[in-house]
Image 1 (tube, rainbow, N blue to C red):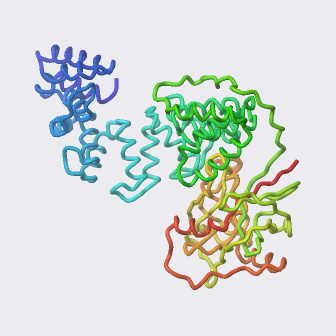
Image 2 (image 1 turned 90 degrees about the vertical axis):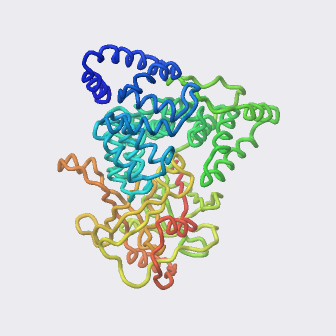
Image 3 (image 1 turned 30 degrees about the vertical axis):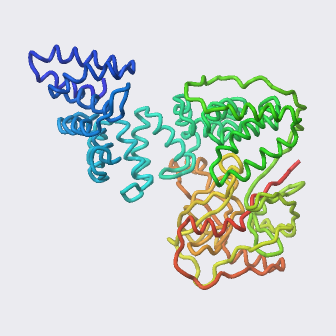
Length: 540
């Protein structure tokens, strides 16, 4: 029995001879609540609430607060009931009283008061209260942002099985926000939340199964999870499902079905993803016969996101139009690079373009361009590509050198198209001026990096490039050797090494203007993104 029901029972027992009937009425009300017959529950809770039964006051308040079961909403009465229940020590009342203050419904909004009551509910392990506090600290909604503190609240709620918190922990552990990157644990959290119907968790689980990152690779199962999230309108899942159907990755190729889901993804995509999603949708549309295209567009016009449960093993629909199987794609390596001259010279890591039969770079305008290898040094892990791109290159930091503790920003393409179609931006600090085993060519940084960040720019808070992202410490191997899991230990090649390489290849690095006021991380990202490119290396 949970603590909140124990609290309600304890109050009822203090009523002496009246406790039996009160508890019986509470049981009947609880049964109506469980079957979601809120009108009947309200009838049962009203007399109990009038007698001062704390749980009854909280539940009746919730019905009035949300207008459940067709009951006429009454926020003022709901807040009165929440207050009485909360002050009597009922955790459910404390949670909802905190929610009222947080939302400013029935009372003037006051985040401080909301924190107090949500905190009291959290002390009783009310998962919704723990999650609400996590969101408060994660988003900085009236309190200082603190992702580490937020993660602790989410973790506590996740350990109680709260689906929204499991989903959030999957996100945090996947991306290394507030906690160390831990893909296997992220996948475990995502699977539990996905099975409870959380769409972002279904997407994360699909990505893990598609890439084999944190889970055994299983494209067919990945497609099923993308399908469940796509049916509810999750844009990235719809896009990934469409791409898998179009290319035959883990599924029987089906251009018409692939176009349908690419179109759902493009229609619902957030602004940063929309241009690329739209281009991919239109490219597939151009390959469809006119009658098939018209049929799919009619289906799109009538489509609405699902709201009911979708079975975990929901099969993909049978092909509407048979299409030839797509040729098997060869091995592909991906990474990041950035323009260092107006004439299209692009800098990246040597290991990103190793053993490439062909190389393409995709600048911010989204049009892939062929690239050729102009110079390379394996010793310093740098390579220079020649492209037809023309535009404003990055500017390198001039003046005083970086110090330990200086803030830096990483821009790159982790996991390429699976998590985002725009360059990702992460922030951290220079934690040491030398790399592994004291290697003076590298900075040690805390900004999170993943596969695909290699070759990307490391910038200071003025938007000037100070290095090239190169590597991350293998946390699992270190943990095996030392028993300690290292967190956010990553490396970037120093700008002085980059300058030597560029000078040897005949490229003059552009110095940044005089140091000005520090920019926000978002502004640094916007500035450097304009010259940052996604690199694909076709290996066979």
